Image (cartoon, rainbow over all chains, first blue to last red; front, top):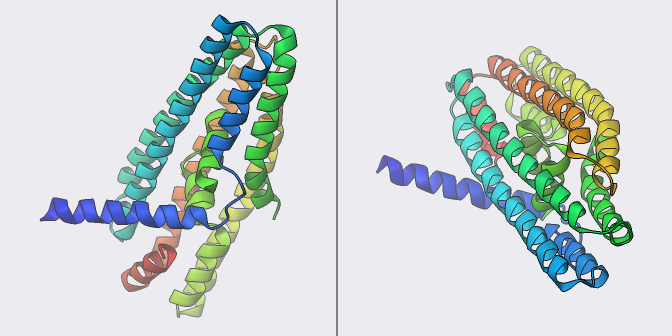
Length: 151
Length: 131
């Protein structure tokens, strides 16, 4: 019974997380940006072998992002459960934050490694276009955060 | 959808636990203050709680502005064709250290705030924050 209740609470928390996160919706999501990166590779790299390897890397970047997305949802659900209780000790929060941070660093390092593999496969000329698309993607992604900080 | 946007950016340029809870989950200083104002009746404890939130928010904003420059420089490096992975390491190390500090301050704030609220007020505040 207790495990059912915990499952229900986690599921409920995830649903609510989804609701909150959907309210300030910009017009596009991460998938759109990944698609733009994919199109930049497809439209720029003529060599089929390198193009396929680069597209596979973009696919792996997307998988890392999706996996991290799940880690974040699980983290938020766990935080909400701990935060509900007035008596939860600090050590439990510290452990939760530490675990999440390990996941974040692991995902970030994996993402960076994939990025550098992508760069290594491109020529200088190809990267001029692909790098520009990638830069634009990160600038766009940082906008909501910077707007929050500035307000 | 903003959750995805922040997450992808987080992978590259940071975004710790406290950032997720503040910007994705909606535990912004303004939201928390609104809840405290509604749930804490005692004026003295309410003012103390609001001061705790203000102090946390002020420090967080200061730190985030300082980090903004690091983030931009990191992005310039990673999107450069001849960039080496090792060039990113000092930036990611500083960003990680800053994230640890922000997370610690978030939890300090949470526990300081809890001390100003009764259990009944806390329970009601959490319900309201999670709505």
